[in-house]
Length: 379
Image (cartoon, rainbow, N blue to C red; front, side, top):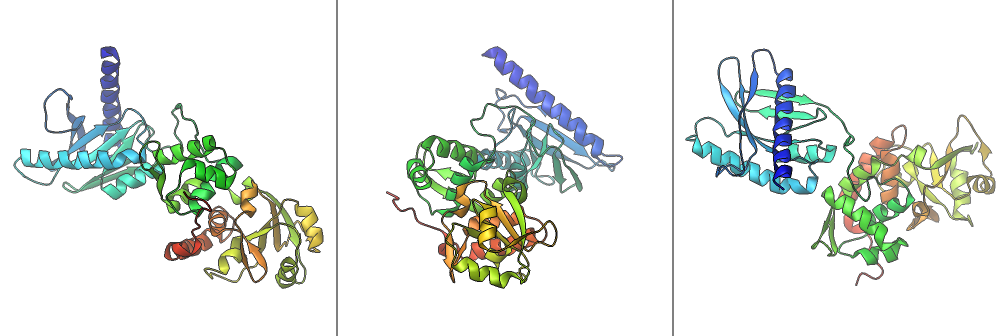
């Protein structure tokens, strides 16, 4: 046990030293960054930090940086506690020094910090650095700002039951987490979506570590879902054009005749993309109809469409999973994909899709009571 503790301390020290060197190389000429001290947990210090750095300007003015080190990639769900501890240590150090000058800068160092973790740290006003080169150091006095982009994917292999949201099984759970109102249990969600409780648990555990899903206790019910952040997280592993199988077609008379035929269609489908979004959040006149169908060729024949390699005005997608055509919304005889699916398709789609996604996202924020669903058996 002692050997393991010593190894951890050595690793923390090495992480700090590497960051000091990395940041120091990016400072303006004449600036200096060095480690003032490594703080031992047994030292009895009021400061709950692992190291104190000092940054010094060419004119001699300096500021301290209080550092907490995580020897494993820091997860977003840990940040509230980390931020509170760092802020308390910063205030304590300020009082200890007689409140001269500004409070020390709070900083987190870790082998890897995900994009969501970095975003949360910025929101909390905490500087950061990781072993891949992700850096953000903001010092008020003396004024200096250093920022650098490192890795966006974790290069460290970890034992984790689920590492991505790729694939239909994970997507079914993600869609349900976005679609339904909390609270609900794992088994309730599994029954509603036709997923296994184990698959629901794996997805929820992954998202809980990212602070996207909140549960009441370790085995408790799911009580909160940050659906907007979940959409961003899902978009990292999903792409409208490559996750689905696209086919391109032409309706030479324009999309109006196509919509008429869709109203009397006897096959399962769901319109997505611009047409689906425009009915809720008008952005610009849609020029292309995108729809999901299990057999695109048969559907195209039924709709009297022509194959088109260029100049297509209809996309028929064989969906990544049947969930794309589940929980559809009917309006004026047309079946539209759920707004959550439409959002993801636009976020990751071509052309003006991302801009249209911003419009539908704003509508969703203002109308959550309208589009959120209740489980059929929430008890």
